[in-house]
Length: 206
Image (cartoon, rainbow, N blue to C red; front, side, top):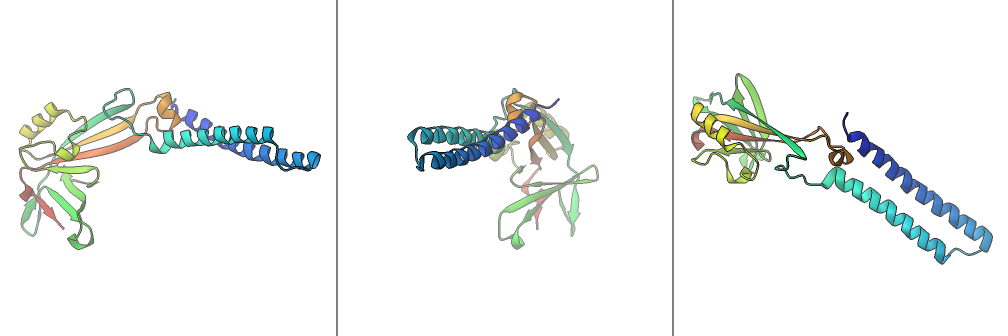
């Protein structure tokens, strides 16, 4: 069973506790005014501050664990990585042969936003944020060199395919209590695509 139930439970409890704190402060203030005709009491105020701090810290911690915590891709205890390799299929456009089609936004006035490629008669597309093209002697571009690629496998496919393949690295969060707190257990973190082509001339733009 996935540990994500732990994250759901903690979120429900955090929200319920926050609502309880608001209700508690309201009730105590009404009772204070009714009994003493005063709207401020040092002891009660100190209690309010502690309760509000606990509620805010709880929700803040849950927000960080769910939305903002960065996971080390090289940490095998937190993530599992699988990589698939696809030989690229050559295509043509107006008698211009290519392996990768790079798409620019707004008529080409802006950087590349996506890459399209074909393999086994299937069409694939990746955004430029999660995709990079290698068109020189370096198999792994500097922009994604920090990722844990299997360099031996990349060299093997580079030789077998004549420098024309796609390597898709998929990262999943492992089913651990820590990932469960952020409701990430067993979910996909990201998929990075390395597009290897013999030269820059095998990439066309539109």
